[in-house]
Length: 300
Image 1 (tube, rainbow, N blue to C red):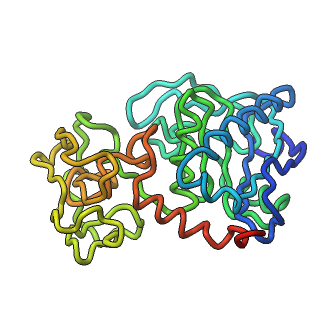
Image 2 (cartoon, helix red, strand yellow; image 1 turned 180 degrees about the vertical axis):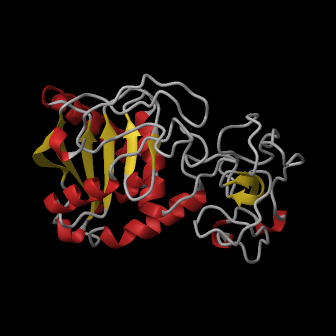
């Protein structure tokens, strides 16, 4: 498995907003696409780019972004699908011969965790686009899955574009997952009741609900409302209460970073908590600050 099971066929700059040296360069690679499926890969990339471009705050930051597509032909379609996984799910047992060795159940515990050979993906992107800032791998399988980390990996499931945007949040901006579980609400999972660690390093979650010192105090909707915005009355499971504030409200909602209690997220919903939602105000602020240096000067 690996480089013996495919080859790099070509590189295309599909979004060109200026010299690579001056822009934020995203490289999208494919895995599990046979040579006769590379037209599909190009279409999958275009579909992702279309939604990416229309998503706030990227819509306003677009002039600072370049996107490069690396066409990689694999021997087989798809990804490894282990027959068993730690979450008691059952897979087909297929072992696909693909260039980046993509696999579901990448951590041995959760089937939806789709991973690849990140070292190879990073080195391949760097070899063809030396100015690369961020790498993504689209895996040619319609099973739901994705992961963040050094490389954002996502499948071609019907929610693929949303998965890609979510995983990009992890990879490019260091966002944490804002959902309050690991296996799922009502799963009976243990070890996720109360967060008791140090202040999280991720910019979109916190253990500090003091409105005067919370890390996103500059974008709180109304500090006078007090924090936390919600508290979970049952730390053995997810909070079931609705949002007491407008959808775009920024406060401190209990339940985040895989814990039911003790860790807070900025808004009730965000793309980092549930697919199909806008990025919350905190995430949008971080994205804008990160990409601002790559924007061309006014009037350029």
